[in-house]
Amino acid sequence: VSNDFDVLIIGGGPSGSAAALQSRRAGLRAALIEREAFPRHRPGETLHPAVEPLLERLGAAGLLVSANFLRHEGNWVKWQEGLKFVPFGRDARGRWRGFQAWRAVFDELLLNRAREAGTHILQPCAALKCLFDGGRVRGVFTSQGKMQAGWVIDASGPRHWLANQLGIEIEKHSPRLVVRYGYARGECPSRDEAPAIVGDDSGWTWTAKVLPGLYQWTRLSWDGATVSRSWLPTEFERLTPAGPARRADVTWRMVAEPAGAGYFIAGDAAAVLDPASSHGVLKGIMSAMMAAHTISTIVRQQQDEGTGAGEYSRWLKDWFTTDVANLRKIYAALPSPPAWVAHQ
Ligand SMILES: Cc1cc2nc3c(=O)[nH]c(=O)nc-3n(C[C@H](O)[C@H](O)[C@H](O)COP(=O)(O)OP(=O)(O)OC[C@H]3O[C@@H](n4cnc5c(N)ncnc54)[C@H](O)[C@@H]3O)c2cc1C
Image 1 (cartoon, rainbow, N blue to C red):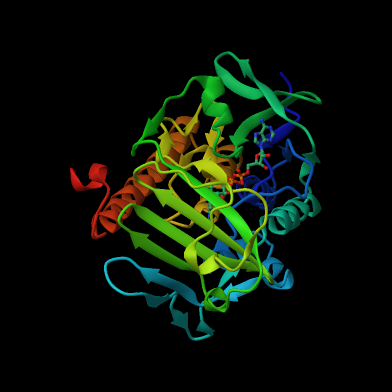
Image 2: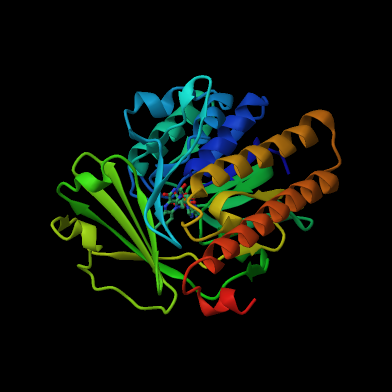
């Protein structure tokens, strides 16, 4: 089997583009396939300030700033007591500020950066079936034909494409959790400076201004209560729903083996937490960078494959376990914690 590429990446979200940029920086021949034509919609606009230095390391410095996204210095939080402002912090250069990165724009800009850096990109092109050679992942049958590579990085998002192909278990760390989310048009001055997360007896509600005149909300109810298609949080009552409420499965989960013979899994494809942890994009970029870095040490410095895959898996598992423990602590601090946290 000849290798056309050192690494083949599935998915052109932030994780896939970060994997491609990191691979290119290490001098690897990288290809990426993305199923959807861009721009395409994705929830998850609020980016932690730490995304910016990561993008700098990927050679995409200034991408967030040049896009002119709205910025915020922290979040409003109402959990045990009254609403209070929690800033991100500051350093010698001033206050840290997050971004409201409209994902249709952000994801396309990042993918374009990966293309400019020399990634071979096929789009729209879907991964259909995994290609094996002697028990090792060797590429993918795609909607545009067979693609082979030394390594495959799955960055296909929360449906866990490669784990399902390989029959890898997806370990659940919470009961089934489904968030409802949506958008509203108009003006809500109380939300203009910073997003807010407000806990209550049966869950929490997140609200944020994501574009001029456009606001986003996310609602998680422990009791599984659904909201009507036109529901809006109280503070958005004067706004007009922009499209129906949507839903997403945010059950806390992680694939049992995030790396193995010929493959690495990164971003949401590897692990998902509900968005109260709110760093999905940051974690996706970091895990993708780590996956591509590990592959480059295997390819360029002849690191043992099994050791590299094992180290990556342990790193991701430790990180996920810590996040789960922290999220449990946060939920346990609510006046009426969900039964599955209170009983622990
Ligand atoms: C309601 C909600 C609110 C959220 N809010 C935030 C937030 O405020 N901040 C934050 O940081 N995170 C947030 N998140 C999480 C964030 O959306 C994800 O963590 C992030 O999108 C993960 O990026 P990714 O690149 O791993 O996956 P994705 O963004 O899902 O990208 C995966 C890509 O792979 C492509 N793909 C899938 N299957 C195939 C295939 N077979 N072949 C080829 N391509 C394929 C898809 O088309 C997609 O473009 C939120 C999530 C939800 C549900």
